[in-house]
Image 1 (cartoon, one colour):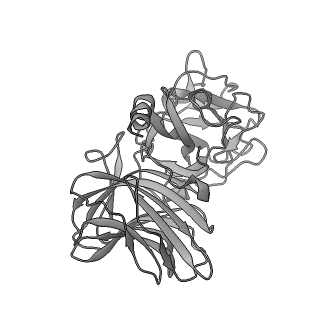
Image 2: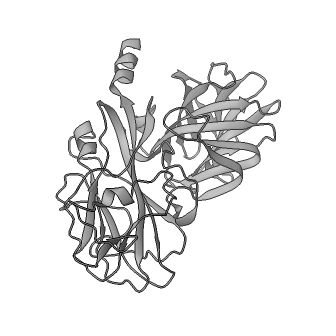
Length: 378
């Protein structure tokens, strides 16, 4: 099981740098596509010259990733780039030889090495890569649909930039990307097949909402039996903010609780929680949003604020935070994912009222039938 630090299939349906929970930089021509996608409901499209969708995923010496790419139109003749690990002159390029239609990798100051897979238009290809920033030599490995290229080498690189970018540097290029998984562990290479699925709030938790404290957007009290919280937090795209949960009065022990839709049998490689939030205005306020893996909330992962160290929710437009969830004891399993619950509230400052707009758990996942098929192919 890989130790993922980030995974997404873009099933949240939104691209935004607000809060940096979904992206840290959006440049040029990009969009989420609901028509061309590998799995689920969305993929990322990047096209034209010098366009990218960037995520900051850690400035460490070893970076391992997997994603899927589809070439909808070929870039111009010669070598172009469709991915960047790092930045400035301290980077690896994921390259495309548009003359020979092959995918490769190169370090800054090095020579590209290509996997012997000839690509076709409008076909999804799995790209696994490992970038090791080092001195005196940096190394890059890549596989395309499991076929490896010779290791690429280049000059010393420190890995000081923490970004990963889906990228286009050609005016003719039109790329689609889906199902990203990212790790900082060398032994996770190659991460291998997987797909991102989005689990929205569903069902009933055990809330402690009080009276006129934790409310829906119309001012009605949240109540697990008659007005459960999940229905206000399950919109996709998660940018949709027509309904939400708010904390209208101070109550540091008050919160809503909700589980998520369940997942079917399969192999799970990682899970990430995403929160969309805002407030009634931009004056200071506070709130918390935490995820439990066992339902007890004795231990939890913090998405944005916790019950004792709360975060500022005072944004007039929707902002986003995400958190890669800690691997449960015994590793990820269907039962572990289906046990996930979230709580929000705990505010001690409602000068402007904090809003919890939407939530999602994104899971990197191989459904059971796909897993059996892959095992049989081996």
